[in-house]
Image 1 (cartoon, rainbow, N blue to C red):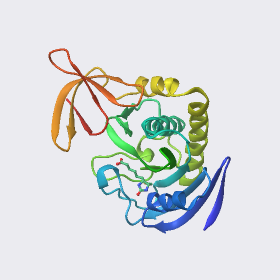
Image 2: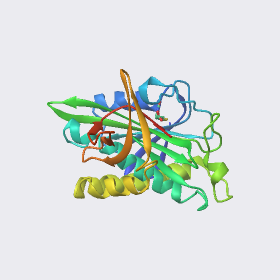
Image 3: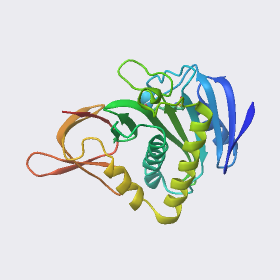
Image 4: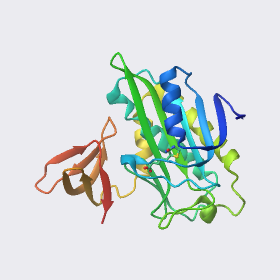
Length: 245
Ligand code: BTN
C-alpha cells in the first residue's frame, strides 16, 4: 500500500483490488474517517450502476472516496451531482476545448456524446441518517471500452498520468463537497443543469417495470429528473436509465 498526497484526503493506492467500492464500503462500516480514499490500478470486479460490470484495465482512474455527510438519505442523493460536477471540472483541465463535455442524468460524464466517466454512490444508514457514503469514480484515461471514449483521445495533446489526474479530481471534489456542505445544493444543481445532456429534448426513461417518454425539463431539489409528459403532466424520476432521441 502506497499512501499518496492529495490535500485533505488520505489516499491508499493498491496495484489490484476486486473493487475499490467494496473495500470503501467495508471501511465505512468499520468506522474509518471521512476523507479516506481507496484507489487501485486495475480492478477485477469493478462495478457500475445496477450491478453492471465496469471494465478496469491499467491506465484508468478507479477510486472510491469515503464521505460522512451526516444528512438524511433523501438529501444524500444530491451528492451524486456534487461528484459529477467535480469530476467534470477536473476534466476541463485536461480536455481540449473543441470537444463537448456533457453530464448525463444521473451521473455519467460524456464527451462528444460518448461515456468517459461513471460515478456510483452507495451508502449505509445509522439512526435514520447517512452513516457513510462511498463515492466511486471511474474515468477512462488511456483506453475505453467499445463505444466509449478515453481522455487521452480528447486531451490537450500531453500524456494524462493517472495519479496527477486523481489529485486534480480530489481537489475539485473537496471544493465542491465543502461548497455543498456550506451553501447547499443550489449552485451545484445550476452547474449540473448548465452541462446537462439533452435538457429540453425528448428522452425515454427506462425503469425495471416501465418506460416513460417525455421532455427532459428539469432537475428538482433532490436531484430527481423532471419529465414533461404529453398532456401537460409532470413526472419525477428518482432512478432509471435515460435514452435520448
Ligand atoms: C457507472 O457508470 O455505472 C458507474 C461506474 C463506477 C465505476 C467505479 S470505478 C471505482 C469504483 N469501484 C467500482 O467497482 N466501481 C466504481
